[in-house]
Image (cartoon, rainbow, N blue to C red; front, side, top):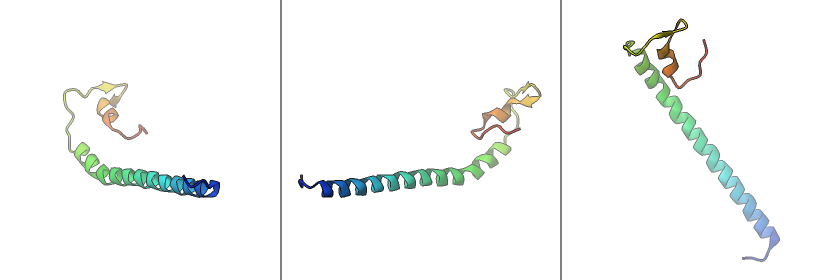
Length: 73
């Protein structure tokens, strides 16, 4: 539109920086939101009593595998 290679280059760099900043802030928000909800989830999980669907598999309760966090014995 401006017939200027330099202007096009600068505008492209500005757009790339804005996109990366927005992406970073979005990921930061998702991590913050997960961090805020984690204590409530863990407190809710501890209050549950083992139900009839919980069975022992190889000496481990299957209720340990219903979490979203990684398995670290």
